[in-house]
Image 1 (cartoon, helix red, strand yellow):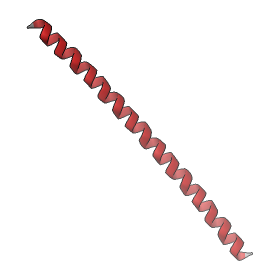
Image 2: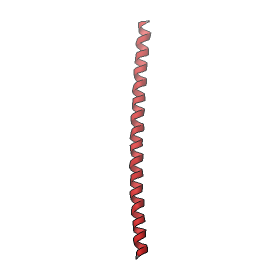
Image 3: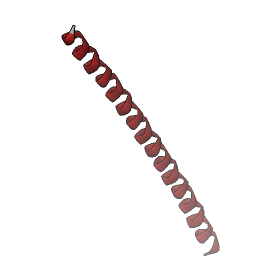
Length: 57
């Protein structure tokens, strides 16, 4: 009975830990996506600026 309880407690900890790790991975994925989008936006602005500079010359 005591062994079953210990096993159940361990399983619970693993499930909770696994859920936490999944949430952490999802958060990091969202941050990466946001950073990628920001980089894309900056590149787009840079190309617009360089085009404007070329047009002025």
